Image (cartoon, rainbow, N blue to C red; front, side, top):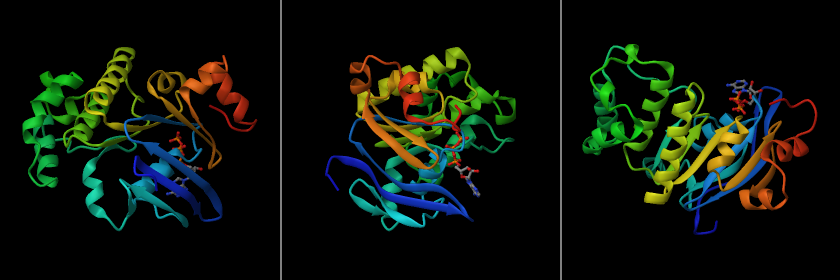
Length: 242
Ligand code: ATP
């Protein structure tokens, strides 16, 4: 793979029973990009992301993280931060206790980052609250805190803006842009909310019915003079709703 590719997926195929959910998917993320993986519900976005973490076993294909083939090279997972589906926490523990526990899982490092990341994500006042006192949107933000604690080189976010209120979406957008620009963190973000992802992504991958139908730069779409919704619909045929 190219040295500057943080993530490279080659010819990934996955079936659940007789249902083919990933069909020869290949994609690559260059260092420092924000890559938006767009597609309808059920298109296969989460299955792609779970495959990166070996949570789903592909039938065929290869995945490389930082140039090393996965899942052989487990060390590479430590360079990732992620939110996959709805983040889960210990409900009867506080925000801080959950984050300390997460740091322990990662070998005791990064405890010193907790306050700073809570502050950046707007949750510092919730630090001593138990998880069952948090709203859905707050839990989503906390998922982002947990994903950022280990200063990841690659941040993988599956539908991260689900459950966020308008202010939360704006905060989230600014935070991702700031992390990307300040630390050069590469970001893979999946969503069916086209416009929001288009605002921050510089590369777009469009998934439909298990296929990556297009990988294109944001600039190229803008130069065509079309909006992301129009562009998306021109690629995704009838039968796929968004
Ligand atoms: P959404 O936007 O709704 O999260 P998605 O693009 O992430 O959708 P996936 O969750 O990857 O889509 O699902 C792709 C297809 O695979 C769907 O038809 C789904 O029902 C199916 N699928 C996913 N996981 C499993 C599983 N463990 N067993 C059987 N089928 C599954």
